[in-house]
Amino acid sequence: MLSTAAVHHGVDQERRHPPGADPLWEESWYFDFAAAEMGGFVRLGLFPNLGVAWYWGYLVRRAEPLLVARHHEAALPRGEVLELREDGLWAALYCETPHEHWTAGLEAFAVALDDPGDALTGERGDRVPLGFDLEWESAGALVDTEGSGYAQACLVSGEILVGAERLEFEGRGHRDHRWGRRDWWNGGWMWAAGTLDDGATFCGRAVGGAAGRSTTALMVGDVELTATPRLVATIPLEAPEGRTSRLDRALCHFVAGDGRTGYGWSEWSRPLRP
Image (cartoon, rainbow, N blue to C red; front, top):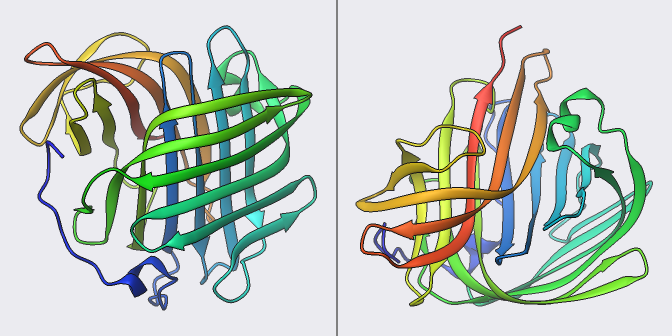
């Protein structure tokens, strides 16, 4: 890891945590993968005090539509099992070995969007079967995510199904697990995580970059990077009382200050004015 010091968490920290009293208390498990021509991510967020779960399953590919499986009104999983069953969606996350090995399964009807911005106008597009059978295995120590959880660089492998097409993936990615109050609609932020060609990784809040599709300079901790977005996903977010925000995520090609290169994801949270 380039950007933050390693931290130590017991194996029980991988499990669900007792919720706080805040309505916006959220616990989430997030997994991504990135390569030059393809990437994606899944995220499960639980809002126990609101009685709903958020699920994101996204796939980006060069010269192909963005595939979106987004459910923001899913029923909370029961017990310790991180599994969702909704109309047009089955998704599950399994901790095979704490801090070492996770698997993610998905069977869903995704929406194909020619323009990521169409996510903000109703996510209208063709329905496409989308499946993930992917594994994340530890490729580094756990690092702190601002005191409310941890992140980890991983090796990612498995199969992706798009309609009748079967795609193999083997590459790099990250995962994180965090819990606590999460107000998506109060102030913006930028986050970046990736792996360089020598195996060095970075993960954390970024400063200096501007949301968009053009090359931008940024800092993650003390790491100087230039990020060029290659493939973009936009996620609309609505609060229970009506506030709105958007999360722009981009699979990026990164160049470090010393010339090393690699791939990963950047995200920009942008609350919207009423």
